[in-house]
Image 1: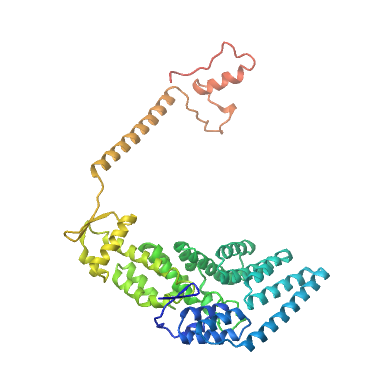
Image 2: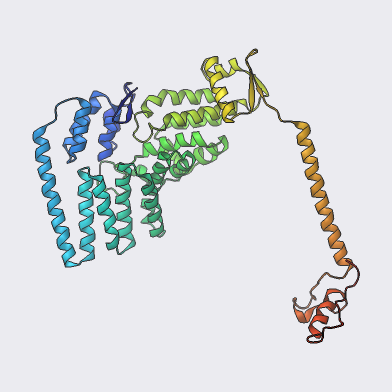
Amino acid sequence: MATENGRSATKVAPTFDVHNYIAQYKGRTRIERLLLIGTDEARQAAVEEAKQGKDVGLYQAAVSALRVSPDIAWIDGTNKLVKAETDRLELELKGYKNNLIKESIRMGYDDLGQHYHRIGDLLNSHKAYQRMRDYCTTPSHIVIMSFRIIHVSVDQGNWLTVQSNVQKIRNAIHKNAETEKIQAKLSAAMGLAQLASSHYKDAALSFLDTDPRMIQAKLDDPNDEEAYNEIITPNDIALYGGLCALASMTRTELKTRVLENTKFRNYLELEPHIRRAISFFVSQKFSSCLSILDTYKSDYLMDLRLYRHINDIYSQIRSKAIVQQLVPFSSIRISILATAFNTSEKSIERELCDMIESGSIKAQIDLENGVLLARKGNERQRMHKEALEMSKDFKRCMQQATLRMETQYAGLEVRAPKSQGMGVGSLPSQGGFGNMMGDILSSEGNSKGKGLRSGGRF
């Protein structure tokens, strides 16, 4: 494993076709994914992609990764074009401000923000979009602005801003046919932010809730509103959602929320190996599940959004599988566990020790006999505790029953007449609490010497 520019770059060649894989994406993420793959073919493709745009910094990063000399003439020419375009857009925006036309100012900031984004100046792009807020006059303007900020924030890795703007859009829109088009994008963006924060259960729920209409998007059509391939593709949703669900959900949840989910089923068809892995896990065929995941691990290490988390996700999936394997047994030989998980006894012993120390399993290892023993609780103490709880519950019930009997015997129970509701004028007149209220109401200003009457003792 090599490291370049703060990223892990595997030397293993990908098992997928790089050209077909990268064709799903567009924009900045396309070049970043090529650089992360790290092969000479991918780096050369990244250089060619960068030269088609105006991001000089990204082009220089691609050239540096490929270890070739940069095209100085292209860099100088692009810098001049960028400066001229920036000056023109800023001059236009200044004119709009002088005319005090809010819609023109909003569009001016929008054009400037997109320009900065294309040239790789993400900070100024973010600032331009934020300044649009004062000139947004309709909910649709707020939606456009927030989606622009989400796009820039994803490229920046500013995930808190992504989450806040997703919520802002959800608060701004109302349920109708048009809003259904953007719900898939909102769920996908929120899932990415939660995945980046290692909140795997929340990320899984967001991806599972993503509307399948994104699957029908034409990825090569820039005018297709369903496409979101500058951020994420349907295959990514299946991959991220499936792995996060495996790492964070129980077998029952995997069956009901993933395999039986009519929305997510369409995504799983794009990544059938993920569906098979989940099915094996639900069926307690843990060895087959882990074998599938290990086969594709090298590819997952080349994924821009996943490579930082893949080891943690795999560790959680494996720990869950081991725990589930131990549930039916009070004791089990370590050699059987090693065979079941296709590893050596020493390796599984280390895993079991780590899980015992972390509290994932309550057990102890008999190294002499090579047996894992489930740690049983103190049954005598548990029975004593349950008996005490039962006695407290019985005492409380008896006290409540006695209180009710004494209340009835003392005539303090208030009953409303059948013909009318409760009220001061409808209190029963036969002794007890009704007479007490009558005494209080009839003795205003002359209460001395008159006490409350009770029908008996309490």
